Length: 324
Image (cartoon, rainbow, N blue to C red; front, side, top):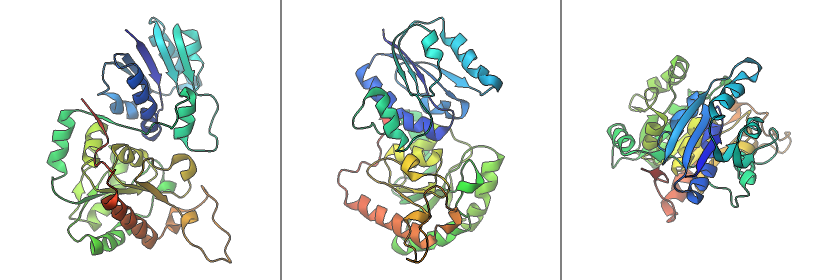
């Protein structure tokens, strides 16, 4: 029996991006027993992996003591493959036949390609999600069948990455001109801060489906998979939406789409640097723009183009997920 230790990210977005290489490993070792070590907020992504042995939730501690705790937990086992996408030294101090370690910090190019290079995978495997039948059933009770649902993700992990929430109502006016029967759905994470961020959007769009705050990550993914489009800030939810295979439009200001753009054939992004500017103005450098500089017209135009492309893309599959 092959035993794999997979050490991945603390945050949801980075963890989602790592699911592609894990899925590729599971194709090569379909009967492997897998232990995943990740941040507590990301642990729900991996609960339906085939042959999952254990999920170890990492909580950051002073002086990097969380790595020592993980090492003590994993040391008694003999591993066939250890994967460390965090670049820590701990796998060198436990028994393992093969080691795959991502070295170095952030560098140019998309993170998906950096992860693929660790294994020499080419092309880079796209992220995926593992859903259960219960996830699908719960999702069907929130996101109705036969309706055109457009998902919004108005939150992010820090204020600088958040597009002004009062613009979603204006955006909705543009979208419903072309899709008058569409219904909005609002997605957001658990906790008081997320609820406060989404409250004004819920007030501006009273017809919206409230699809946030009380669901697991895999339930959220199952709901996103039932939508026809996702529009939202650079966040874990954006990457989760793209992983399901639905058309995904990411909004970027002070973060870099060259490193963290949503992935997949029907994923796009907009930022102030991607908008047409007056020739006399200096172009806005990537990662140094304000979200307030992204216009409603720009987002609406990109969203409608993406929906139109999805209608004509016969290779597009509404749900690109791994089911149990």
